[in-house]
Length: 373
Image 1 (spheres, one colour):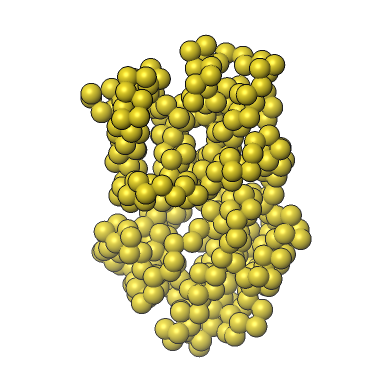
Image 2: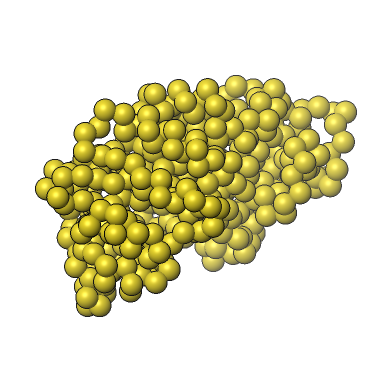
């Protein structure tokens, strides 16, 4: 009997997990052994317990033929690396193949003792078309070291469990089984940000609220797509709260703290006041988040990647329908720095056309720094 080992955090299990297992069966395997990792070394499982992930996996796989779940890692709370777990599975099931996604092959060099894994069994891997050069380079590298790699004729959709968790937190629909979705909502999984979201919804109007959700979602997408390596928890909060002062700026009785005097009453006031409000009303103390809020409209010279991300996502939010946005999204998809510079130029050219010389000084400083004007 031919058996494939398919591991993962499954936090949560999504439709492409199921599709990948089914495609591996279609390639001639008799059985898929699904192995949820209890304490994955590369991933943060948030507040979701192993038992909850097992529940979701059991629901997702209910009625799926020739797929079984092995909770072999549920013996303690230690980190269990693949090179340690795989021999136990081979002893239990006999000869196996190890199944992984294209991203995992690209990142295989970061795993613990990958050289030992390739000696244990063949590797079946799914395509990764949008990173094909990296994928092919990784395949050749490990084949040169003796790995037996089979590329399966299926390219999974680019679905990330981590982005699904944040989409759930933000209230978006997600590509998971409906029964799994029900379990998630009934057990309030991935609801860490609900207090922020609930409070923000009362502070700004509906249009601005949904824009804020969209900016958080798009910033998370860009962080994932371009492998920026930024803390997704901070990214979500900065995107969510970037416009938190939009209504408060109209309140003449509100103490505006250190908001620059020359910004008060202008379209950029809310970015400076937003940092004050985020700190005062939402107890945000992280300067990386506050700084990104503080320059998300104007930009500034020498911005950090985090600041560039929130500045860019504010314009590219998928809720925005202006004709010029779609080409900007395409430019951003080509590369993060390229997309950011394109946005700086577009925004500066637009403001020059609309306002002439009446542009906030920090916006001009940003354009001078990045565009050499």
